[in-house]
Amino acid sequence: MALRPPVNEDPRLLSVRHKGIILLCVGLSVSTSSITSTIYFPGIPYIASELDADPMSITLTTALYILVTGIAPVFWASISDHYHIRRSPIILALAIFSISSLISALIDNIWALIVLRCIQGAGASCALSIGPGVIADCYPIDKRGAAFSKFYYGVFVGPLIGPVIGGGLIMTNATWRATFWFLFAYGIAIMALVFFYLPETYRDDTQFDLAPPAIEQDPTKSRNFSSIIDGSSVDPGTTVFDIEAGTKAKLEIIKSKRMNPIEPFLMLRHPFIFLASLVSGISFGAMYAVETIMPTLYQTHYGFVAWQTGLTFIGAGIGNTAGTIVNGVWADKLLMRSRNKRNGVPLAEDRLSHNLWPSGIVFIPLGLLLFGWTIVYNLSVWAPILGFSIQNFGMVQVMTLSSAYLVDAMPGQGASAAASANFMRNAFACLLTLVSNPMSDTIGPGWTTTLLSVLTWISVGILVLLKVYGETMRRWSGY
Image 1: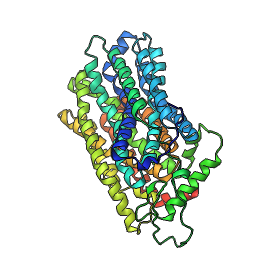
Image 2: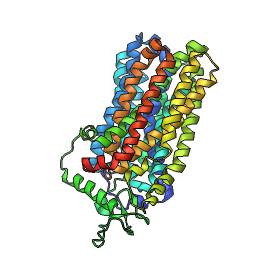
Image 3: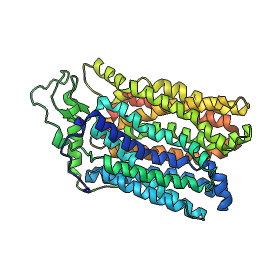
Image 4: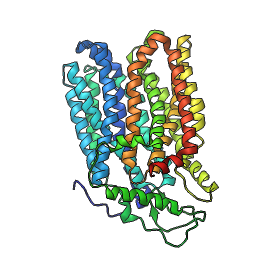
C-alpha cells in the first residue's frame, strides 16, 4: 500500500509465472492509450451531429489526444526514474483515465470533449514510458525481445480493435457515448488488476548487481560471473563491457539529485536516441495516417458504413499478431547469434537484427502501396485490407526492435529512453493524422501512400547508420 514500497527481491529472479502476470498488467495498462485513440472513430458522425462540431474540431479530438500521449509520458518517466517507482504512477494514471472517460460520456460540448480527450491522453499514456522500464527491471537483455513483443502488442493492437469495438457500441441507444462508458469500465477493471497484482519492480542496480572481479584486463577474453548485471543475466558470454556500461549509467543516476522533467526531451540531442526514435516515429505515423484516411476511402469507394469499416481492422489485427509472434520467436535468438559471433562480447546494436530489413524494405512499403493504389483503381476491398495487414506485420517489428534497442543501450534509464521514443512516435502520428486527409483529397490515396513508402525507405537508411555507427554514436554521447 506504500507509495514507494521497498523492492527486497531482485525482479529478474521472479518466477516465469509472476513475470507473466506483471507483463499482463503493464500490457493491459498500455492498451488503454491505443484503444482510446480510435474506439470512437465509428461514432464521429454522431458526435459531429449531436455536438454540432465542425470537421476541424473533430480532427482536434484525435490529433491533440495523440500529441498529449506523446508529451505526458516524458513527465511520467521523470517521476518514475527520479523517485524509483513504477507501480504508483500507473495506478494514478489509470484513475485519471477512468474519471476523464466517465465525464466524456456525459458532456454536451465539443470543446469540453477536446479538453477531456487531452486529460484522457495524459492518464492513458503513463505505461507507454514506465512499461519498458518495468520490462528492463524484470528481464535481462537476452530475454527482453520476446517481452517487448508482448508488451508492444498492447500498443499496436489497440488502434486496430478499437474501431471494431466502437462499431458495435455505436449501434446501442447510447451511440458514441457508449464508447466512453466502455473506456470507463475498462480503465476501472485494469486499475483493480494492477492494484492487486502488480508489485513494485524498480530495480536498484547498486543493490542487486555485484561488482566485477578486478583481475583480467584483456577485453577480448570472455568474463563469466555468477550474478545479474544491468541489461543481462550473466550467462556465458557476458563480459566486463556489460558491467562497465551499467556502472556508468548507475553513477550518472546517483549523481543526479534533482528531477528534471524535460530530461527525456533533452535525450533526443543524442544522435543514436534521435535516429532510433525517428525510425519508430515514421513507421508508427504511417500506420496512423492510413488509419485516418481509411473510413472516408471505404465509404467513398466501397459504400461502407461505420460498423463495416470497423470490421476491416480485423485484418490489420491479424498482421499485427503475426508480426508479434515472429518478433517474439526470433528477436532474442538473432541477438544471441550476433553476440556469439563475437565470442560473447555484447553490443546494443545486436538488437537491430535481421528481421528489421525485410520489414522496412519490403513489408511496410508493400502494404502501403497495395492499400493506396488498389483503392485508386477500385479493386476488391480485400486488397487494401490485405495491404494494411502486411503494413502492420512489418511495422510491429520495426517499432518493437528500435524501441528495445534504446532500452538496451541505456541501462537504468529505461522509462526515460522509452519516453523519448514515444514523444517522437506520437509527434509523427499527430502530424500525419493532421495532413493525411488533406493529402489524400489533393493527390489521392495512391500517391499519399507512395510518399509514406519513400519515408519508410529513408528510415531503413537511418537503421543502416545505426547498425554500423551506433556504437560510435553512443560513445560520443557518453553511453
